Image (cartoon, rainbow, N blue to C red; front, side):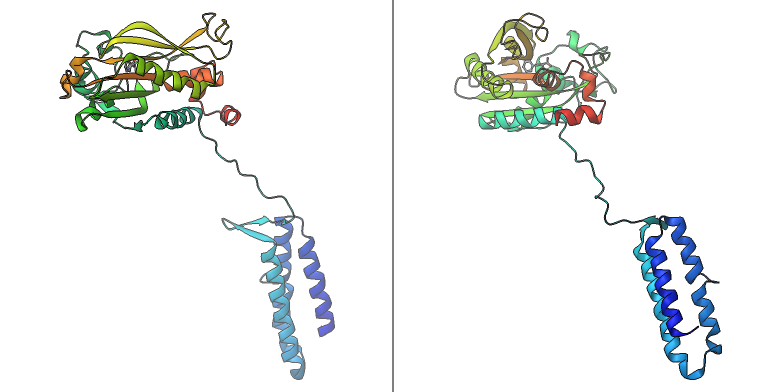
Length: 335
Ligand code: PHE
C-alpha cells in the first residue's frame, strides 16, 4: 500500500465512522479498523515488507490513521457505564423535571410569612411527646376523650406521637419568659381512619401570643382576620363560634367566610357560607401555672389550624389524600 492509498483508506474509514447510525455499527467499524485483526494492526505487521527508506514516513502515516480513527470512535461515543451510546450533539438537550414546592409546604411558608409580618417567629418541637406536654400541661385530664387510647399512637406509658402542635406552646413557654409570640408548624398524628377529609398524619400550625400587658379576644380576632385576608384574598372575614378546649377559656372555633361564594352558600361551604378552619381561645390560667407563668400577670391567646384544611379550601382540593400520593400531575398543577 502506498501512502496515497493509505490516505484514501483513512478518508473512507473516517467517513464510515461519521456515518455510523448506531452503537452496533460503530463497534463493527472499531473491529474492522483497530481491532486485533483489523486493517491498521495488519498494516503495522506488514511494515517489514515496506522498503526501508519509506518505512519512517509510512509508519508515521499508519500511526496517524490509527489515532484519527480512535479519536473519531471516541467522539461518537459517550461514556455510559462502559456502554457505547450514540451521541448526536445536534439533538435538543434532555429535559429534566424541575421540582415544585408541595402545596402543604407552600401554605406553611406563606403562613410563616404572614404571621412574621405581625412579629411572630417560628418555633419547633418534636413529634414524639410525653404526656405532660401533650396533655397534662394543656389541662387535658386523663379521662378526656382526646386522651383516649384509641385516638393516640402510644409508645409505652409516657411516649406518644403528638396529637396536636399545642405541646410546642408548653415547650416555648417553659423555655422563655413572656412576651412570647410564636407560630409552630408541624406534623401531628391521630389514630383516625383515612378518608377524603381525615388522615392519621396531618399538619397543624399553632399560634401563641402571651404578654404581660393585657391580651384580648379582640386581638386574636384581628390577627386571624388579617391572616384570612392575606391567605385567602380580600373580602374574607372570620367569625368565632363558642366551643370548648381544655387549654383555652373562653374557647372558639374559627370560621372563614367562604371565599368561593363570598358567603352566599355553595358546595364548598356546604351552603353555610362559612368554613371551619381553626380552634382558638384565651390561654387557660391553669396552663400558665403548669409552665410557671403567673396568670395574674400574663394573658394571651392561642390558636391552631389545620394546614391541609387551609390548603384544601385555598386550592379547591376535594380529597386530603391527594396531598400524600405524590402524583406529579397534581403537584405540577398546583406548582
Ligand atoms: N390543639 C387544638 C386541636 O388540635 C386546636 C387549638 C389550638 C385550640 C390552640 C385552641 C388553641 O384541635
